[in-house]
Image (tube, rainbow, N blue to C red; front, side, top):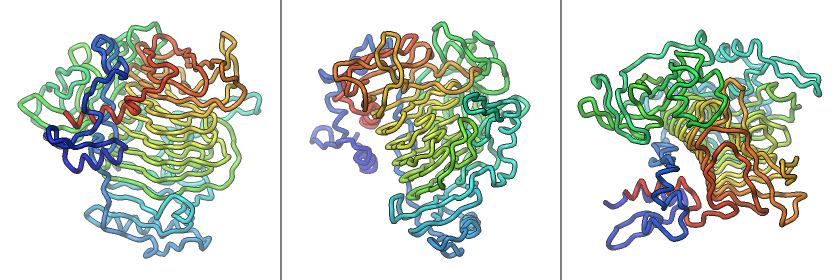
Length: 568
């Protein structure tokens, strides 16, 4: 069946070569002659594929990887509400006034900024669907929003009170800096542009701070990576409905969900995996595609099996849809670095509670954290540039989210976590991105698994020696508290990661890429290469193929899987 013009257009935008033949009509070039002599074994050898299966990562992004981000034609200008760029005056009231007008419009609406610099000293809450904040471009001569004060000087209306309570006894201690202070709530939460569903809650920190989760129906059976499941009662399910599938670990420290997450490796599993019976350890937002009796087809592959030993249920999900921010630069003033977990809250965007959304063409300078997220599904984050001489906490972090595509991020400034798969993140992708300084591809503790690092380049300087005396860099960083360790679960995949060593290493000297002890049967490392020979120290048992060799036949696993999916 021919691929539609809409899908062909999308493939072209994604950099895929599309060809037309008389016999096959128009399909992606990569879908023709799928098995080539230079294909990696993990994509071509049946035995290897059976032993080391790859999830289908191509469902990440807006509309499960297949949709075009929309352009909204109804425009509300901040100028009509009194915002004047470049006048040095505060524009918060005008921006919030434009947002209030937008909320009264029934359909999709674009809040438009002109070129020039605006000043913002309030949080811009986006709490309804079908709204995009749009500027004239993220570059010089485009739209800039300048925020002179951090979030810790701005009233958030109690939005982070649960985080503050969670942090009541959590201290950042650094004797060298004479530092002992409570964790900042802005280390991993909050932003000047903040999306949230009014009835939703992006994160659950403890049982007493959580909201009781409702059950739409129990799920009786489902095979891992399939898209067909059996439910106990489908009477409340309908096509187009967006729900969450929740897996709980109620079987203790050695329960079957722990094995499904981490395999059978001998690992220390943090207490957050098994200490609560009411907070889910894995969640998967999905859309109902079809209902036939009690058989339900969902939009994306099932993360884990569902059966009597591994029960799961559908739960309602309060969320926004078609929310975006685009073509804007967010600028903070020069500000001192107060230390890890002591951030003041120079945070640009905090996107929470969105299904089908986007952030694109955005520049952020001098931030504590540029892009943070929670409770997302099928969001595309594209063409992000993060700069400045201020040391940051996060560049781009995907947290408690599913099927998020980060495509074309560039992190120039020093950050603790340049690109981060954070707590409870699944099915998400960092693609075609570059980290220029002190790189960290962070695999934060907290049951993150089945994520992809795809065609990412890092520029690194070795700072210490490996056990064999070779120079060593630690790009596969593990953050997060011990209660959520190990760093990640099964099927995390690193495809065509390029490591460029900048100083102090002779051409013939191998460099060790180190990681901490991680989840069993993980990750898959394919095409790790660079400008020096590399050695991998990544316990306990990763799958490694094409070390020191770029996979030319499949430069991007995400693009390749997307092409296969569309052509089939």
